[in-house]
Length: 437
Image (cartoon, rainbow, N blue to C red):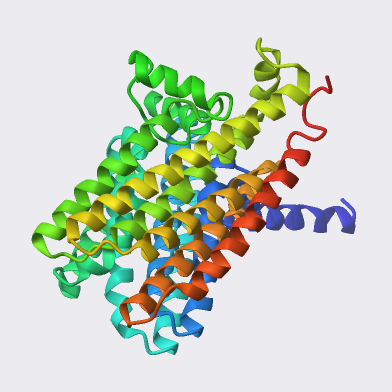
């Protein structure tokens, strides 16, 4: 055997050993090219970036909220990867595949937590550490429930609903208790992952998640009034399905319930701020589901009632405008009712919240029409964060004795900008994506 042949065997063996020991090989493909994973990771990354900017500018409350959102969103991505692992029949046959997923999951979650902790320590925001630990406890509890039963992943939206209340919960939950709960949940997750089985229901959750956005709903179409309402919004709600109707019913009910409880027990929950924020998030889900289910566009185009591609675009934009009017109407009604309940009906506040919700949703719809990829829709979440900061800063200014006159001027300017973006989005919707008719 010649000298080159003698050196070839050790080199090949070394390369295979390096590939086997490298746990991050293929991580970009697994995490960033998977629609479900990149959706949560994008929101988490956006939350961390905005949290760092808010912390640098002295917006401690906003930074704490955004860091918590980054941790929760990253944990949802980790849970998604574990469910995908249980749904794959060949995961047990590929050497070191599970080990690599576990290491990558720990790296993703640990990186987000480390950035939040280091930023808080560097800027002296030590009071926010308790909220970050509690957000991590909630994330671990969610991952553990998903490992016990993959059906729990349908309730992932509850994590995001609970994020604004983390700072309130830390006032009643001591830090030492959160640390102990974190260690216990971490040990339980490790124990379950050592013998993670293949589950047929995990595949069902995985496929349903890609189609419906991980949100389970009962059949609401049997109610005649709701059927008429869905026809009123058609075809805007075609891709998201009955989830849109359920959210439109759930948001005002939850808002009024929290408002009554907050008034009765003096909890001081920012109910109207939460309603405005989740209204904008709900509008972003319309185009998120459209991009997710882009292959259904041809099916929608072939349905009767549309005059080709031009008619479909016109009908979709009319449905968007109707949905925008419904969201603004819900915001107006809830603001008036809660203001009347508190006995402090401030028409300036009512007008400001309604106008700000209008321009934020209009920007979401307009830029959403231009989106063709999931990461495009993820970028529109910057509007959600900007709107949240806008409303929270204006409400703080009002509490300090200021007025909203200047905010009104900018609300009208942004409302005009939102209408222009809506018109521009109509011209770019499905441009080159569907057959010209």
